[in-house]
Length: 297
Image (cartoon, rainbow, N blue to C red; front, top):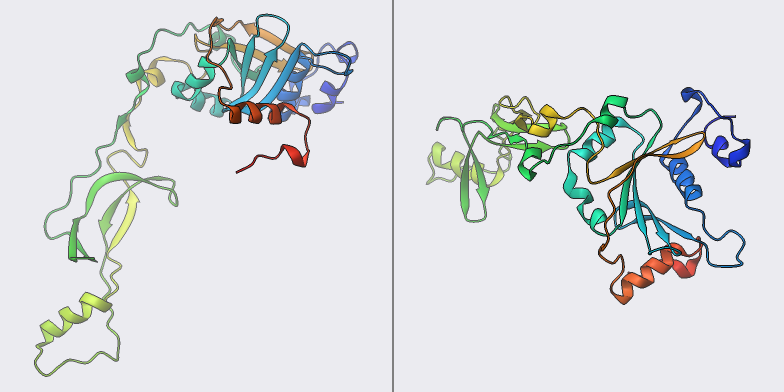
């Protein structure tokens, strides 16, 4: 027995140890384990201690305590090191989640972080420590390398090179470079008697020419990365670590283990203020699927 089936067993029937290769931990399996860590009302006889909500305001799982001090515990689920690193390098993404919870944890499979990464004490970073040195692009080419496009009020001239920008198709930061121009004129267009060949060509190209005169290539200033220097955090911190403002829980075949306790916030922001937000909260908590619980645009 392996993977999700291990977590389906009661705690007393689960194996004490299970090889890491047998555990196929997905985000759903991790959330199921967190739900069992915060049990709610299973019998319907009374109000359960915990109520769990998934994907509420960008929080992967939110556990609400109805018995003691109205604790609100949030979890950010990460099952890969690359995804966790992207999250750590953007602390502003979890700022609202931290403000609305009394405790906030990273929930990861057991063994995802190295012991030295767990023991790493995060210094007090400044917001600018997370900023990379962005690429300034390529110096625009000389006047002989210019491209003309017909705008609403007439021809517009753009220099080649210039700003380094992201291209989704190439998955890199690119700049524009010149390519041979192909001029096309329709066969049915004829030269008037009062026109010179140069004026006829200009009139034709103004309205009917198609010019394949630019091409996007990876920016050679930054190598297509979009930045020329990494941030201070990327240079000094390990690949993954546990931020000082959150805690860490690990999930294995034995269940959920709190590795680092999260700092506790005494007065978080309310998770629901308006009537619409309260209705949304009730809809997320109630059993699904139910057509009456669908969100109304």
